[in-house]
Amino acid sequence: MKNTFILPLACLPFTGIHAQSKTPPQPNIVFILADDLGWNDLSCTGSQYYESPNIDRIAQAGIRFTQGYAACQVSSPSRTSILTGKFPARHGITNWIGEASGEAWRETGRHSKLLPAEYLHHLPLSETTLPEALRENGYRTFMAGKWHLGGEGSMPEDHGFDVNVGGNEYGSPRGGYFSPYQNPQLTDGPEGENLSMRLARETVSLIETHTKRNRKQPFFACLSFYAVHSPIQTTRQNWHYFREKAAKKGIADEGFIIDRTLPVRQTQDNPVYAGLIRQMDDATSQKQTI
Image (cartoon, rainbow, N blue to C red; front, side):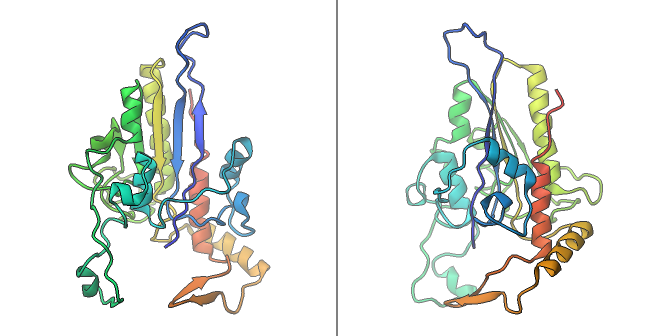
């Protein structure tokens, strides 16, 4: 399971402190996180098929770290490492939360010689997280989107986020990428509303509301997309566009090779996945109105 994270960090100028103040200004921080995205799945990282013009603009205007690696190939350990600054073996979440371990591995029909090690199934309250550290330094903190680091007692609100929209114990969107979402932390929108776009709008709304109420207080906003984790879904319009693009490029007769025991895709020509990437990219173009 590939899991490369996109980390465009947008530091918005915090203008609430006078320029002559002796206290260094604290920047507003917008942290955008993509889930399960392949290292070559964006235009700016080399894809000739998938399209990501809005993320490309963030990359062109900022700094790209081309030798960075996720702390783990699955999401829960990587997310915990991002929040704590620790390697998975140090914080104890070494697999995606919910995966079988120990003897339970056999019950899934897998009979490898070695059993996978046990791991923590929630982010420990003893860990100091990024939002907790920022909140202690005067920040208002909020997130929208995927959490997957524990349920009741280990939710975003228990680990430093003042506001949580859509974050829960599940690793994938239970209702898919279109409303109704089946998400207890997110009210349903109009039928067919796109999840990535909704999470982006929620983030913008949180920023606007906070800025109107207290412009002098810096904020940390985490937009944590469920995309592009399964289920792979898109609109008919996106599917048609990328299906035509794949046909023009030429579809390979054989697009997989076997890596030990599993087939691994070698060509980029899946129009549904391409549409899912486009939906996430479109969501990053949401703008503040104030």
